[in-house]
Length: 516
Image 1 (cartoon, rainbow, N blue to C red):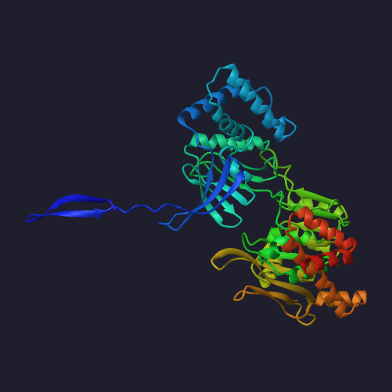
Image 2: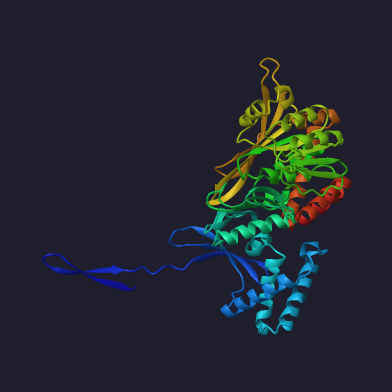
C-alpha cells in the first residue's frame, strides 16, 4: 500500500506524519446483459466502498480521431439530409436511409474513416439521429420502467424492474446540451416547448409518456424530463406467479370470478405493482367482451380485439379549453355500451362516474392509491370522490398490493384479496370478507376457507362445492403449466386463456400431461 510522508514540527521536536493511502477497490459487476448486441450492454455495478449500486451503459469506445470524424459527419448530414427522418415509413427504413447517406458523405468528402471504425460511427449516428441520443440504450432496455433527469451535472436515474431506483453513468454536462435534448424530445412527441411555455406532457412515438420542463424558471436546477416507458411486452400472470407476487391458487380464483363478471379494485402504494396486476387481471376477461379503458398514460396492453383504449389529452393554448380529462373519457365510455370499463387510476370526480356505471350493470376494474382495504373505503367516501356507501358496495373484490423486501431483494406481494359483501342492514357500514392473505414470515399465501362470490355463483348456476373446487384446480394446473413451460409473453398467455374458454378439457389435459 503506498505511503505519503509529511514532515511536521513542534516548537521542541521535529516529527514525521505517515499517511497511508488506501487503494480503491474495483467495482463489482452484479449483472451484465445485452441491450443491442454487439454494441450496447447494461451493467449493474456495486461500489464496494459505498455499497451503492448503479446502472452503467457500456457503448463502443471512440478514439479522439473517431470523435472528430463523427462530429464532422454529423455536421454534413444535418446540412444534406433532405427528408424528415420521422416521416419515413418504418424505423428500419429510416436507419437504412441514414446509413447509406452517411456512407455517401464519407465517400463524397473523402473523410478518412478506417474500416474497423465504420460500424461504431454508424451506431452513434443512428442513435443520435433516429433514436433518443444518450438515453437511447435506456429506451431499449425492457427492464427499465422510468427514466428521469433532474438537471445539469446530475446522473440520469432509472427505475429498474429488478433493482428499482438506480443512478446511471449518463450525465448532461451543461445547460445547452440538456436544453437541446429537451427540445428534441418535444419534437419527437410532435410538440413545442420554450421559456414562454416551459412545462409539457406528451407521448413519444413508442407510446411512452414524457413530462418535460425547460430552463430553470420552474425547475431551479435546470431542464428536466421524466419518461414513463410504455411496455410493449408487459408482465403477465405467469410472471407474477413466478415472482410469487401471488399464488397460482389465488390466480385461479381471480380468473374464475372475473370470467363470472366480477368488478375488481386494485389498491396499493407507489410502485406496488397496481397497474401490472390490473393488466394481468384484464387478460382474464372473455375474448368476446367489449372493453373500454381510460388512462392518463397508456400502460394497459390487452390482446382483446373488441377493446377501445383511450387516454387523456392536454389542452392547447392559454385557456386549455381543448383538454380531455378522465371524467370526459369515462362519460364517453359509458355511452359506448362496454361490458368492462377499466380505469388506470381513480382519484377524482371520475370515480363517481365509474361507480354509477357499475350500478347500472357495467363491470369495472380500476386502481387506487391506498394501502389497506379500510383506506380504500375511506378514500372512496372522502373528497374529492364522495362515493356513497351503496355505490361502493358495487365492487366485488378489493386487492391490496405492496412493495416490500424478501431475503434482502425488492419484491411485490398481494397483501390481501378481500370480497365486498354489501351494506350491513343495521349499521349501514360496508361489510367485507378476506379470502386470501399473504403470510410475510413464510412468504406464502393463505386461503382463509370461504368465498361469498364463489358461494353466490354456486347457487346461481346450481353447482356443488366439489364442482367449483375441481374447476379451480383445473385452472391452477393450467397456470402452473404456463409458468413451468415459460409461457409468459402476453400474446402467448392470451392464446392459452382463449383456448381454455373454447375447450377447457383439452387445455387442462395437455397441461396436466406436460406437468407430470
